[in-house]
Structures are given as structure tokens and as C-alpha cells.
Length: 264
Image 1 (cartoon, one colour):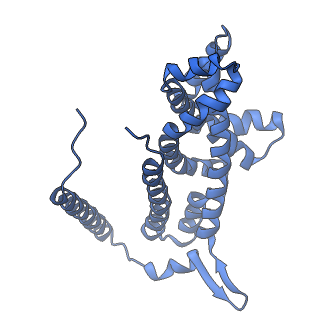
Image 2 (tube, rainbow, N blue to C red):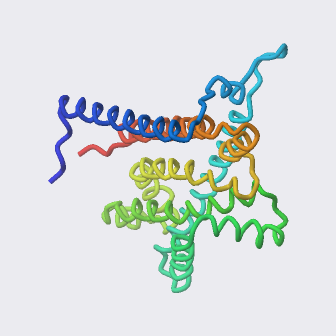
């Protein structure tokens, strides 16, 4: 039985609980900072976001980090979707070798920490392939998220009714034509919302690329803290920026769920 949607009163109760939770966390942070004798200096933070000169708007280090983060997320998402589709098709193929290779890839990626994978690609594979930090980060994130994307795509393909396959074959279509013209267009409607949710995870996972000295949002935050000792102000600002990005993507998920919902 599907759960009932919350009533208006239930929605307002949920909002009240969320606000109380935020206030409680803020109180704990203020108490912790007060116990350490921390002196808040929020007025110094805006200059690290942006400033204005005679030439006009000048992005600060944090906004520059946001741009790098979004570039990494966008490129990694493309790699993840390509890898995910390939691995999903390999798992569903009738070959003896392809499903085993796909399974090996999934087990290796999903059962080892992402940080280790980033180090392995950057320190071991990158010198062999002749690629830099940015490409290493994109490759590591793309392979990691591709493992999860492949399961989402495979589930979407499997969910297409058997009758659609049989109708395509009876029309004279081959396997790849059936995938391209019948199965994948229907599967896409089912997998786009969960894949967008996976993109939200990708945004958060991208913070780990700062460990290989990529000046993304997290790395820029580390530099500012090291130079100014504005620990709380900087990290709260960085967290708020990540929150804005992920909440925006979640709104996209909600929109897509409504637009791509299958009637009935």
C-alpha cells in the first residue's frame, strides 16, 4: 500500500520541526564557539565571494571555486552516464564475458572508498595516461558515479514491459534498433529522476577532489581558512553554497518527476 501524502497540517508540522532543528543546531554552534572564545567576523566574508572594481563585478575565490566545482560535476556526469549506459548494456547482454566484466567493475568501484580511487587514478594511472589533475578528477568521479548510474539505467531497461520487446522484434527490428527506437526512449522517462538524484550525490562527492590540489569550492575554503583563521564563517559559507546547489538540483528532480511521470 502506498503511503498517504501528508496533509496541510502535517506539512506545516514538518516545516516547524525543520526550523526547530536548524535553531537547535545554530544554538549548539554558538555555544561551542562561545566556549572557545571565538570572535565572529562575518563582515570579512563577502570579499571572498565577490567584489566590485572599476572594471565591474569581480568574482572572489569562493565563486571561482563554484565555477570549477560545476565544471567538474558537469564533465563527470557526462562520463558517468556514458559508463553507466555501457555497463548496463553489458550486464544485460547474452555474452559470457561482458556481464562478468561489468560485475567485476561494479564490485571494485562500489566496495572501495572514492578517495582511494581518486588517489589511484591521479598517482598511478594519470602519469601513464598523461592526463592532469582535472581529467583525473573527472575520470575518478565519472567511474564512481557510473557504477551507481548503471544500476539505475539497468533497472529502467528491465522495467520496460516484455510486450514492447516482442512487438519490436515482430516488426523486424534488431537488438540495437530495439534498444534505440523502443526500449531506451521508454526507459529514459523512468530513470531521469533517480539519475538527477545521483547528480546531487555527485556534487557532494566532488568535494574530495580538493585532495589532489584542485581549486574547487572546498579547496578555496581551505585556503581562506589557512590565511584568515575564519574557520566557522568560511565553512558555513561553503556549506551554504553546496546546499544551494543541491537544493536547486532537488527542485529539478521534483520538476522532472512531474513532467516525466507515466500515466496510470
